[in-house]
Amino acid sequence: MAETSQSTYALFKHEEGFLKLERPSKYLHITNKKIYDRLRQTEQDFSVAALKDLLGHCWHVQSLHYELGHYFLSDAPYFEEELSLATLINFEEKSIIRPTEAHKKTTATVEKIITKDEYENLFHKTYENLLAGNCYQLNLTSLIELKISNTDDLINTFLSIELYPKLGEFAHILSLPFEERLVISNSPECLYEYDHERKKLTTRPIKGTVADHLGKDFLINDVKNTSELNIITDLLRHDLSAIGKNFSKVESMREFFYVPGLIHQYSKISVELEECNNLSLVTSLFPGGSITGAPKKRVVELIKNIENKDRGIYTGSTILNFDNIYKSSINIRSLDIASSSNLALYGAGGGITLLSDAESEFFELKAKANSFLKVFFKDVKI
Image 1: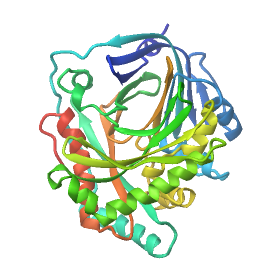
Image 2: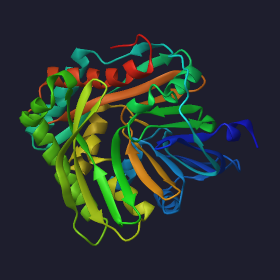
Image 3: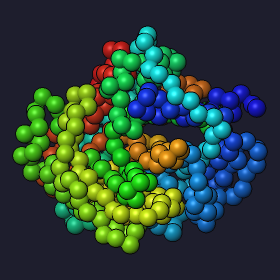
Image 4: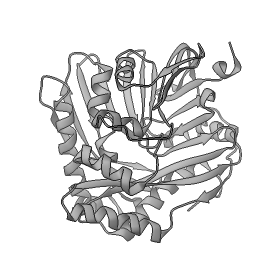
């Protein structure tokens, strides 16, 4: 087996440490132009029909880029240049890895970050669409460019016993050498999770974030964050109800959790579902409502025009379907690293409503970036 195949692996936070999957038996890389079979070294032309057929199969790991969602929300082609949409992999081996004792934090330099003036320009474009009634909420984001000093040290930091309690529920690593990419995600957000015994599908959208020093009461009493959560909860109720024969229900309208430097609020919505169909789940729920907005179809079109760049892995999803675990993240707090150069993209942003103001939203963007950077790197802050 080739070196690139041997060094392909997926690693997920697990109750016993980390679940590691390796030795791929099937590996498909899908772009908007081609579907590449990396192990057989063959390719075929891309089509939406072929994409949906492949997503109807069972895959241990699916890495879905945000731009894939355009092909579920519209029949029109959205992208002229070739770009990645998804990676689908089945693996032959699994192991459980315990957190390691020693680690050495690496450094990074910020190569490019949006300025306050640039952000305010995007904010005002978004706000004009809100005033015009084109949407109710739009998740406005930006990508930060970083140069990583040492990715081995970064991986060791992720695996360390010191960091383990700070890892999000959906934290994972994807080593994808066929694509010359390394993904390191500390995502706390759930797109969906399926309980096989109870036959229940659950989503937990995060909507509403403040710096931890402000406290939970501030978040509870903040009208803007409450509005965000209400809008997206309603959107996800609709999305879940469309999947099964039963109506979804809100199990909890507002819960809270802490991550380094931040307090998040989220709701919990579920629907009874006898069996899961991967294609149905992906086409109904992806991309997540919390990182797009409402109404979703219109907002996805607006985001493309306003942000004017590809999000890639950021706000996409990683799906794990293995050993009775069936869950999907929303990839916030995530690094997409080019293996050949150690250049990385990190995305951050937040939901914009008519109650938003540019200065607060820009501060939130930086706070979300620092929440990740100060945990994984030495002496990096924006």
